[in-house]
Length: 369
Length: 242
Image (cartoon, rainbow over all chains, first blue to last red; front, side, top):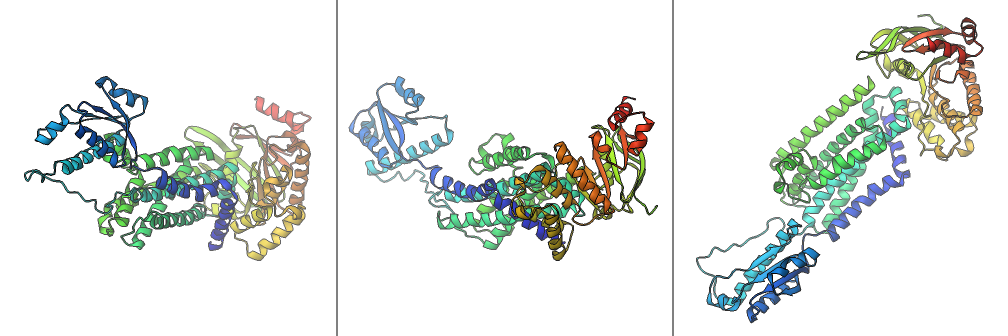
């Protein structure tokens, strides 16, 4: 049996090494994703264009506008004169935010009168709008501290925040776990479902089924090479993340790799399941892309937080394996927790894998009947 | 079981829900015979064949292939038969050599045996020069004969050919039948499905399936006599019309 298995794995490696597309997905995709997420996609803003409607036009308001720009986050697009102009910049897409400074800004500010600054953000891009409003609030606070040169009101509640586990809010801390989850899923699930579908298309699967090989061995022989390669890939991404983007690995490396292995098995089970219902490679490809990649990217909490989604999407997000795997990765890598803290997520992944394997097995048997 | 018979089938039936795809068919095939299994598309020949090669379990009836029960000893049946489908089923991105080696491995042949077999097949098919090129590059006729040779890499008693000449031009088809004769001459049984009626003439005996039942079974000559026809094509048409 071991010999047959070896013959299988060898053949599978021939397939992989001779197909440029597969090679590209295997090695190009992880690299591209890491680089895109690492260098191109960031949530941090530089030079966001803003308009200012300055009713005050006094020295303090000028200083305030300068102060806003001093952070490097904002750049003044236009000074507006009437309220009617406020929307124009946003409509044209030139500015993301309008700040209205009230009349008597200077006088009210220094006499300790309450001052209200109006901030109007372009809500068509809610995540960005939120971040920008936060930035403005921070800048207003720092402006107050600097200018009034008075001690903060002793009765005021001051918030002093510290970001645990990621003090500088580096986005790499988020995208490295996310990318591992995506890559493992794509390689394991998509490529295995493709390779099994290909055997169906070419008729070789039929020949294998007529041979005395047990079906389980056929499937194992097909998925093992992909398991090995995707596991290697996961390690590669971890290394890249650690050495290029300085993502720490606080927890146990053994546990981390064990968890990667568990997820690889989940993805392989999914891939096998997809292949049992797909007749052609194209079919398998569409199912993997729509059914796996999209939800894993959008509904796993990788890019958008799950809690801020409509209830329905939150439920869907909870059946996406990547949701749990990303949670596990972050817990082990960043917070350095042990197995006892992630038991819930691990249990769910194990349960999902069992269910997928059960259905894949049933489907496979039914087809044989 | 008669020693001469390598396939014996009695009352073999396959039902899918209310639909009876194969309706109580019975026949025997003798050792070294070329047995043509004919029928229009949807007549049930593929379903019947799947039961014989252990891919599908019969709903009723029984059958023995190579001396083993097709229901209870499917694994043994599989070990003793070869199978080639109409897609030729080679790995296009592997070379001829690698294809032979892989299938040799699948059937658990020893390393030495695989080596011997590889040389033998390559030599017999005159493929030595292109042995290390991917199969994609081979002409269809060569692929067909390579697939046929590979289906017998483990020296089975019976070879099942499922429409082995589909999509191949007449000249190549004739060549292929010569190969079939050679193999049958070595004492191997050939069970072949086809819908080319001219090919039916090449068989020792043919059975014709119509809507799940075997409506005729005899040598081509006797069938033509019985149905008062000049060609197998006419026999077939007369059968199907009723």
